[in-house]
Amino acid sequence: MNYSDEELYSLVNKAVKVFYDKVYEDPWMKDVFKVIKQEIIENQQTDFMVAALGGPKRYCGRSPKDAHLHIFVDDEMWDRREKVLEQSLRETLTDEILITKWLRIDEAFRHAIVRNNPSECTKRYASDEIINVPNPFKKVA
Ligand code: HEM
Image (cartoon, rainbow, N blue to C red):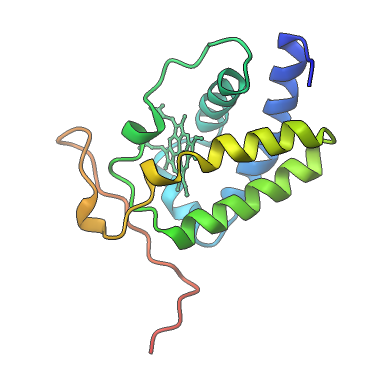
């Protein structure tokens, strides 16, 4: 893994775009992402991952913990996102070291974002809505 800043940015951006194309089509996650334009989250996520992977520190948004306070993400949603992420990375990247590093960084945030109960979510601002999208695949007894 030895890329120029431009190469790293372009690889990450390519993979991030493929990832969010899938997320914004996903029957469950698409409703979570209604609050943000795809292009904006793609730019934020690219800057975040480039910095986390050792590239230029352009990201100046919230930490993942603070960015998701108002979103109910359970382990099922997390695992679904993780599968889509891995699939997207494998479709766009050939560097196994980069893929492994990316997935390891991502997984490190599970405990900061995943909650057991929607009541654990908090609003970042008074005007925030708590985002709690039920799993459409869950069988009701
Ligand atoms: C299932 C897991 C996740 C879901 C459903 C999710 C969803 C979202 C949503 C809906 C937003 C926009 C929030 C808003 O503007 O109201 C957001 C922001 C963001 N997410 Fe996630 N996210 C997840 C995991 C992650 C992970 C693992 C990372 C980083 C490794 C991450 C990085 C970010 C960043 C950088 C922002 C922008 C924050 C800001 O501009 O303040 N997300 N996420």
